[in-house]
Image (cartoon, rainbow, N blue to C red; front, side, top):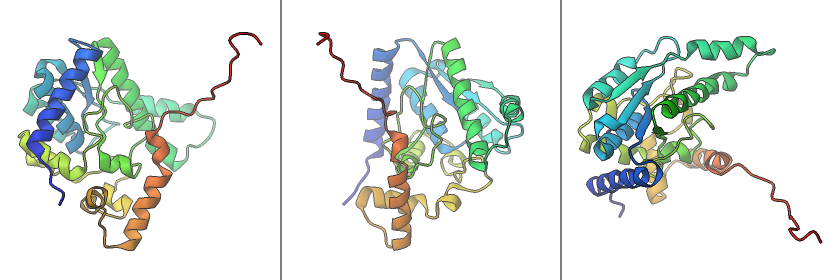
Length: 248
């Protein structure tokens, strides 16, 4: 029977973060995009425990008005970490206004996450940083991330943890329940993640870990999403020519 030891995994993840920074940038800072949701909150808390709060930088990136920015501010205050607020509205509008065509709806929704990632790397390179990826296994499983947006980073503490496992770790870390249990939303289309997906994360997580799901339609939906979005988790395909080093 599946069991999750939150304390064991949390401690191992904290040590993994320390080891990563020791190998890939001793003394560097962890730079994290703070949305006000559970994933960025938990990753920030893990980094603060691993590195110390003085080496964690939160970046809040509203696109104009952000209704739940108070949650992001609550997180940085709770952890006591440095933070910057960078409003990306002008950057998004600068791109959309200068394109010679109308963006598709999907392109319009995915542009802000990609600009946010560019912003995170600008902050990171100016502050001796490493950018944290905040994705979890459940979202990655069904492709619920923007390629070259929130799907990337320099290190990923939680991409092998499901939503339910993340919540357990968040509670163990002492994060406010309003952050850990906040209804997940991409902040792009006005709907919750589960509304868009057609199944709950609890159903998805059980299917991932135990292979159990009662609803055949939901199973087919999950399988289809997993199959069609696997490319997001793979390295970019590259042509490998056969080079004759001896000139023959």
